[in-house]
Length: 145
Length: 145
DNA sequence: ATATTTAAAGATAGTTTTGTCTTTATTTAT
DNA sequence: ATAAATAAAGACAAAACTATCTTTAAATAT
Image (cartoon, rainbow over all chains, first blue to last red; front, side):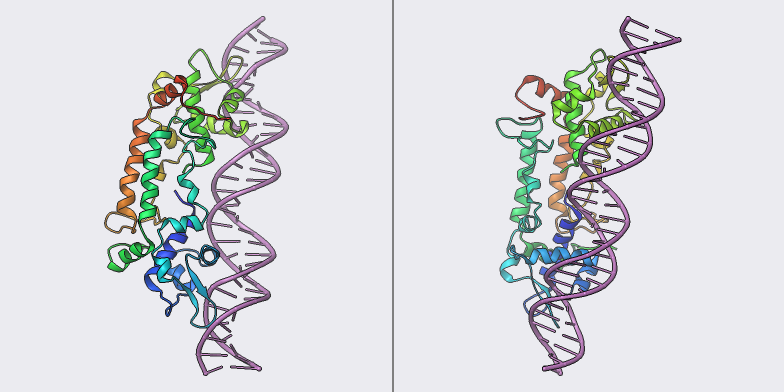
């Protein structure tokens, strides 16, 4: 469904939301290990998430690292997809028509539309914080051995 | 959602189902124009669909081309995805965990599962023939200018 | 101030996906 | 039989995606 980069972005952000705070920041080494992702590649992705979109934050230097603000924790999971430029998955025609529309639909349009809206609703209604809480509770996982 | 190759496979197969028969075969030129896809790339894809899976059929030579049997028209759209090796989309964890399961789930697992089953059901219940009939009826499209 | 720690940035490389072009094989029509 | 038409196969290339490594910049602790 999503690219590797977006999968890592989702897992990393949820992990950061679960473990970090303004006081406790996480290094890229720890994050990559915790979510089982390639370290340098994940670093690149997290850097992009700290840019304009500001889903996560970072500071260099001793005791520095990545963290997420209380405000950002309340953002919907979809905001991660937006920051990764992969939000358009929910807009695209399932048969790849670039002008598929209500008046000129592909043969899957109306049936797929229903499911598409459920997907949008799922990623829009779940917050980063909620998923982080699921991990904290101990019965949901970001990495499985 | 799907790769370009699979999008072309879906559109091409539906077009072939709508226009061809054992008597009337379609050339790759016509098909690529009708679904607005790169000709040679589409040819490769159609060749793969004529292999073991036999979603579509072909014969070379004068008045040759691609066609689909009455039997194959009744296959679910999902069989095209299977033939393209992209059926696993419906199995994969949305966060990319390779061992995500009911007992060790990712934080999106149970909510995503519901939607995943609807997707499977959609592609399993719709037949190639049905989508071809939609195009024939004139209010659904495989290409929009 | 300086050294240390950490993320940021940049260069590079491998792999996959997408796409094109040329040659070959096969079928049919004559 | 031969020629023509068509798909099949193969070689190649461009772009995107995934990944690694090195250097630089920034922040902090001392």
